[in-house]
Length: 123
Length: 106
Image: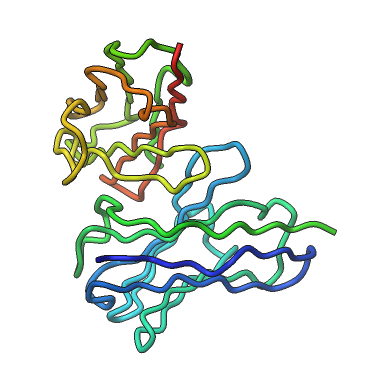
């Protein structure tokens, strides 16, 4: 069974750093792209970026380029989303997603979703 | 960015009603269009991919159609468990989502 299991909720202060995780299981982790989607409180879905764990090829939405870093450790089948300096506006639920294809085709449906990690940034 | 305009933003219908949601892309996206269902407090779930293909295990009362810039998502007979917000998403270019349609029972 394919599963994406995310790390737990976080409460941070503005200016702090944070790294959240998404562990894949039940499939070949290095063969499918893993992306991140933001959902701010009461709002819609926003695609942030995506990584191919096989070779760490990474693409970002222009809206998030330079604001976050996406990485992966294929040895432990885990993808990460990190911030170097959080802002209150980063408060949101963050979902990791699997793109339903591998290799060159990172543009594809998101067939599996993690359970979400709620990040709260408040002074 | 390709903009996705989804309508209506919310709707209320009775059990058994036919429900239709539309999604319009700001440019031609062929059939690179997916539909997701998000129930309250849960992660979204893929229902329809490539505009009209039903994901495995999804009830047949859900369907999708369209190509180019105009797409439609239909629930043929609304059930109580279909209460959710539905999102369209294009992947012709960097993925973008529609604003969502909240479906409620009248």
